[in-house]
Amino acid sequence: MVDAILNEGVLLRLEVEDFLYYEADLLDEHRYEEWLDLFTEDTRYWMPMRWNIPTKGEERELTAESGEISWFNDDKATLEKRVKMIRTGVHWADEPLSRVSHVVGNVRLLDAPAHGEVRIKCRFVFYRNRHMDEESLFIGKRIDTLRWVDGRWKIARREIYFDQSVLLHKNLTSFF
Image: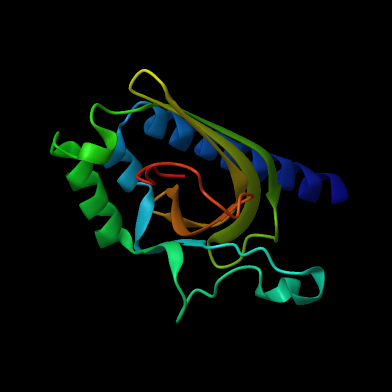
């Protein structure tokens, strides 16, 4: 019995990892419309800002999801608008499209699947090369809620946490 439960957990983690690797490929290949299809209609794509706070106040290090500013606080319609803007070909912040690589690792299931959903945590490294001499490196963590919809996983919620508190990049038009 224990072996069967363990095997189910390992198989689920492998399935989730494969999903995340597929998503990274879609983003690296600029297949944004297919990437958008990985999200549920009620999705939330959120990345708080991080402040440099003394250790005694570390509970205030991240901005709150509601009522405070964040790098991203998007729903699916906003993500679709961002993709449409990039696809115009005149989007100054990423024209021509940057060369990008998404690396995902340290994937862990945070809880057992319940009601067709599972929460996962992973780390990411995102590299971007723009034009001839611009490079960006983003490193962070994500907490995703995946939902089983029509026989496949979809992203119902994505929380993105950069390890940097100050972003020294010209723009933030990429997807994480």
